[in-house]
Length: 69
Image (cartoon, rainbow, N blue to C red; front, side, top):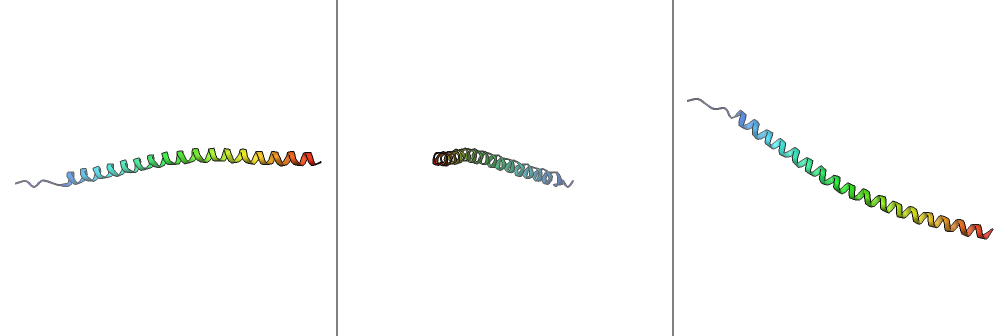
C-alpha cells in the first residue's frame, strides 16, 4: 500500500484560510473607509457653518466699530 501525503491538502487549507483572512481585512477596510468618508463630509459641513458664523460676528463687530467712530 502506498501512503498518501497530506501535504497538498494542508497547503490548500492554509491558502484557503489566508485568502479568507485577506478578504475579511479588505471588507473591514472598506467599511472603515465608508465611515471615514461620512465623518469627513460632516466635518467639512460643520467647518463651513462655523466659518460663516465667525465671519458674521467679525462683520458685526467691524460694523459696530465703524459706526462708533
